[in-house]
Length: 455
Image 1 (tube, rainbow, N blue to C red):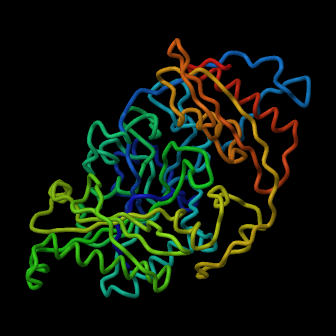
Image 2 (cartoon, rainbow, N blue to C red; image 1 turned 180 degrees about the vertical axis):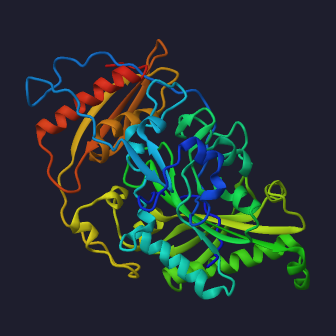
Image 3 (spheres, rainbow, N blue to C red; image 1 turned 30 degrees about the vertical axis):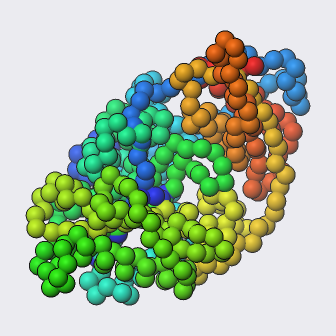
């Protein structure tokens, strides 16, 4: 079957079966050989800056702990190697602690190969299959599907090939995970678009896990899934309409996506909003009126001619769209926290069945949160994303939110930030000792990694 979609926000996972043992370097140089059954997704991009660090002073003795002896932080156990899109990856190939151009933590490496979008009884997989079904039912020439493409790509593929400007914020080390200076964890499935177009595909859908350094709260996670769709038209296909090629593609795009929205959400009110993306012109966002409010469903547009020309195509026009699967699944299944998608608790996983779109999640318990505050004088290099990386690196999915409570600048020009960290497990109650130990470990890590002074 062949299908076509261009998407800009999603999360990716990787299959762990039927994988060949191929070194990562070889995989990057021969990525076209991995395009046989995979998906891509597009995510916002960011400009490139140097890695930033912060430093903290030792915690005050008045900080309360449940025990008098502080324990050394235990690092999570991760596999020495994983199979990703047919490629065997070792931890050392992805997490390079002594390489200043690498900012990939173990927590990101640990997500490789999990392939949530290819699990038919998982909300992400159920939603993916529902979108596939829409294209299968409504288009006689099916879109080709990619759902297992290698998620580590070149900077060129991730940014340059989709016309992301050199100074765009998405290229920044603050926003993107760099394996080295020329290789990244893909920020969006559009990282595969140029290669697939170059292979001659005219209709395709790409789904996969994507990676982005982000804030800590109920709707953001550093790994998520996207779906992207692309359709190419020859100028001869456009001519009978009497419209110019760009207008013809835009009309077809909107008709296609309005049908998709009805397929997923029913007979809802819709509206189109003009917007900007570096890879499409004109560009649009589709919004629907759902549950008494306007909800952004996806971004899309007519593909920039420069992208098409770089793929070796002439005399054609294309449209593309991208969407984030977690964002829509949270609404369709009433899932309140994005961390739940990664839960292996049977009280969560048993609630969803293949083909059952929109089954409402029933909360199996609500454990109490625990709040811990941390205040420090920031440096010029401080970013909130770096702080969130530190917290996630220590607390993992026990960190529910990192929120700025207060900031002020004194007469000397020094700026102080106070953050509240919310700890909560979705599966059990946390003990005071456990929370206090996590907070101590967070303070120690901030002290060692970030150029700040704890107050």
